[in-house]
Amino acid sequence: MKFNYSLKGYGWAKALIEVDATKLEFTPSYLTDAFGDLLRSFVSLLIDEEEEVTVLWNEEPDEIEWMFVRKNGNELSIQITLYEETYETGKAKGKVLLNTECLFINFVHEVINQADQLLSTNGILGYRNIWEMHEFPISSYLQLKDFLQNGSITIEKKVDSQRVNYNDEQSDLQKELRFLNSLMKK
Image (tube, rainbow, N blue to C red; front, side, top):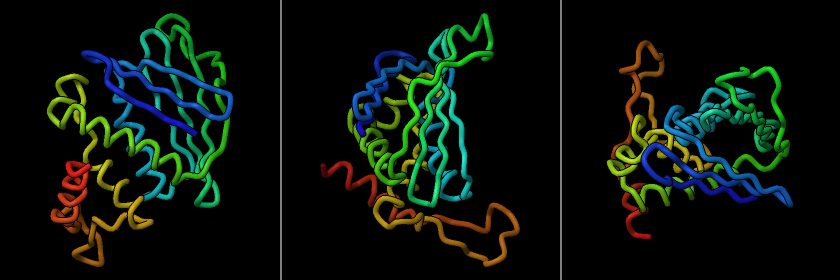
């Protein structure tokens, strides 16, 4: 499996997924936070132990729907569906472009490699300037880097065993900065 994602101009990106003999290319626009939603979906599958997450990419006027299903903790089912000209016809009929399975960790690794590349090429502020309406998904990126290194998300540490409000959790800034610093050393 191969996954590439890059910014290709103000508010536009180019994505490629290649599985066996199937090669698909997409050009999501800034109308959806394509890369951010992708990273957040993986974090959701890890933290909330959700079994299914859907991500929508707007290609103006088409829409791409990514459906991820995590099975047995290690496997990931990926279904990509194209809805043509959603401005006019709605999502009544979609065409399934890809329906495959892979190891969850392998796909996360591919996506995080692209996140590393996006940061190295554009920087955090440059990403925001090019992608227009959306920030680089830094928190999801750090959580997934942590998962790849440790097999779970260990950056976050509970301060209080009973979670009363959002102030009950903190993160380890030194660990977060080590992840970012390791990217600069590549």
